[in-house]
Length: 168
Image (cartoon, rainbow, N blue to C red; front, top):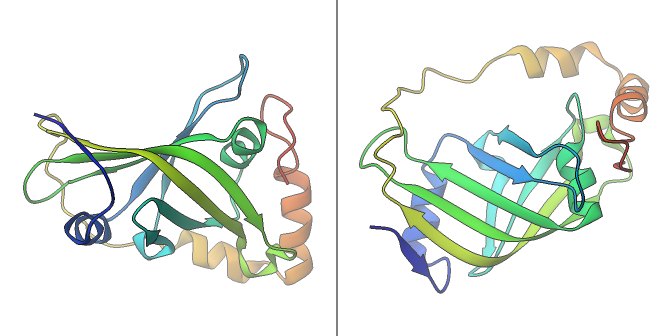
């Protein structure tokens, strides 16, 4: 059976830190496309306090999460146990973006979530999977761009969402 928690305690913090990746779900306030993004590596995710989490927002092919957070702020961060005992943890809350002035390092900003609801569920339907490693493509792609190339990419690909909402 699922449980609702009052806060992110030390046990939950440790469990979150042991997961290989997380997912972020958002939606615009009216119409438009719902978005779910896989995020990682997990070391970009931080528990700030019992009701606040944040993660580095890496340069990517789109900016749906940012646009949706700017539009209405609603966000759900989800973790699944792909090894060990089955479990899913969801952190529902309101997000904000602390934008970096220069995405040349590959990070556009930090998404901070003020958590309003913390819950878990059984996770029986999540398959057991083995983490083989991280993919090298992102690091190679970043290395192929100079600072100005990354800035141009963000201006070209991350200015608006697929629904035309302002992002970066």
